Length: 264
Image 1 (cartoon, rainbow, N blue to C red):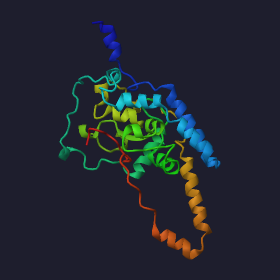
Image 2: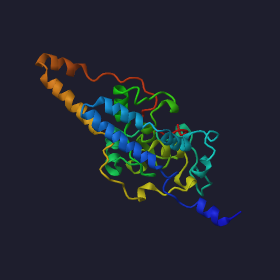
Image 3: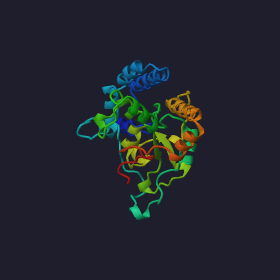
Image 4: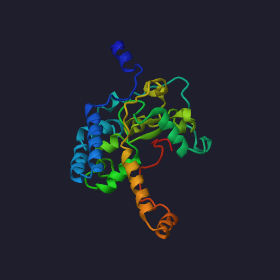
């Protein structure tokens, strides 16, 4: 066996798999869809949402988090190897009791890392933004309970809060142990340590900051519109709306704050 090839294959790397160009294209198309929606052009927004649902984007994500049988080249990306002094898998009673970071902690993590995956660098979109598009455009932005039934663009760019040292290996919820990643990098890594996959610690890498807002402006406009509507109501009606509180959220299968498959 050629040891030079082996050394290169197992050399430290930034991410599991380099992102394909179509991931950036999908982000750009979703950005245009957002602009169309905000300008009131729902027909154009729907066309663009459908355009961002690309099979090649889904294939990239599946190559990282899909089954090895369905993705025979997966071994090229998930290069697991034994690591010296690797922390053991902890029984549930021995793990940190509180796993999910608080809202304030999530805000701080986003302020620190922005909205790009700290591993592969692709733009990220929070589940709240995706859910809004799904409610408004259920056919063009599908989000079912199985991977194939979910919009490929929103799925690949799905923002995750990930433990650098996995929770099941002794990782805590401190800000120093939480980063933002895409779904593929998070679910692909599962509960492996950085050393077990040959990954460079993302906290030592420069933060990508190119002005990408994660399409958050849609939520900002929605909040502003709601405030305008409330202010236009008679005082008694406005008080009734405020007293009723926010509507109860609908059922959701995969919208938790931190997703770490295999580590529960």
